[in-house]
Image (cartoon, rainbow, N blue to C red; front, side, top):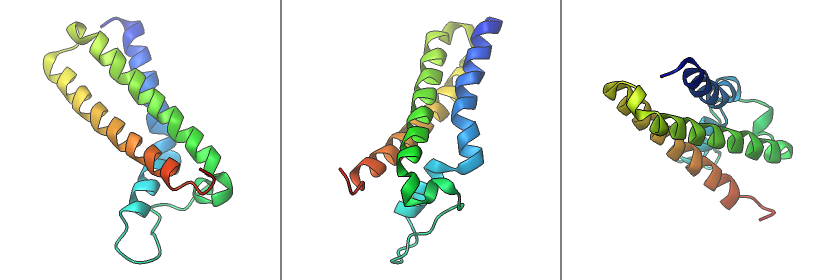
Length: 116
């Protein structure tokens, strides 16, 4: 892999990971959906994105994360020959897992939107 390809791969990964570390938007959506069965959904970590007034901002953050992880997967698949085989499969499996979780969280936000 060339230096430029590595830089872009890590940039796309950082675009996904930085919001997730700071605010945990995907984890908050999934834990509130799959809560412990009580009537009140539990939130993983309280932050400004969990407020109802900031729902559109939450959708934007999750959309940016989804685009970043898709671009990361595209870069990995495009440069498959330049990456080691075991590293390629590691990145591909975890990238697809993150992509599915992000898509599911985005789907939940759209389905349970009262204005939709």
